[in-house]
Structure formats: structure tokens, C-alpha cells
Image (tube, rainbow, N blue to C red):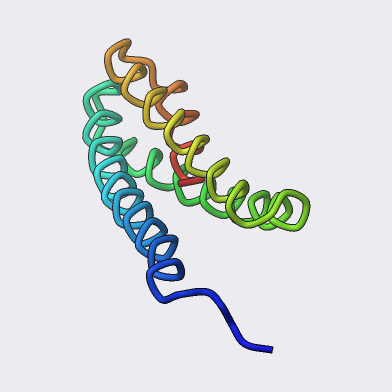
Amino acid sequence: MTNTTSAPQLLDPLLQLAAATAVGSVGLAAGGTAGALAAAEITGSTGAAGFPLGTLVVGSGAGALLISSWTRRTGRRAALAGGYLVGTAGAIITAAAIGMQNFGLLLAGSAALGFA
């Protein structure tokens, strides 16, 4: 039995995955940095600056567990899309929290951002 899948058909999903991963990585780095600066500004204490990044790491761990479970049930593509969707919502929540100067919401957004 021969494989009838051509090289461009295999490369296209791989390029899409690579692009999504690159964008997600940039978003995580920016979110971690902005979260630390925002936490220090919102709370008035530099001691609080590490909380958003710590929450993002916890969100990443939780996201890995949930996404692996989703992958078994829905398939890889749907699970990855779901993870990126939660991460995108986290970025929006984080931006709103910064605008509202709400530390609790900043932490919640950071946790969701970790899913990406």
C-alpha cells in the first residue's frame, strides 16, 4: 500500500502549527512581562510582581492536563484550538484587568493565558 499524501499536504498543517506556536510563545512572554509590571503598579508593591507569572505557570500545568484529556476525546486539532481559545480569552481578561486596575482579575487572566 502506497502513501498518496503529497509533501505540500503534509507541510501545510505543520506550518500552521509552527505559526500558532510562535504566536502563542510571543503572547506568553509578553503576558508574563506585562503581568509583572501591572501587578507592581496595581498593588503598589514590587513584591506582588511575581504572582501573575506564577499563576501563568500554574495555568500552563492545568492546561497541559486538560488539553491532553481533550485530545483523547476530541482529537489533537480541536484540543489545541480549545487551548489557544482559552489562552486568548486569558489575554483579553488580563488586558481588561489592567485597565480596571483589578489584581484578582489579573491573576485569573494570567492563569487562563497559561493554557496557550
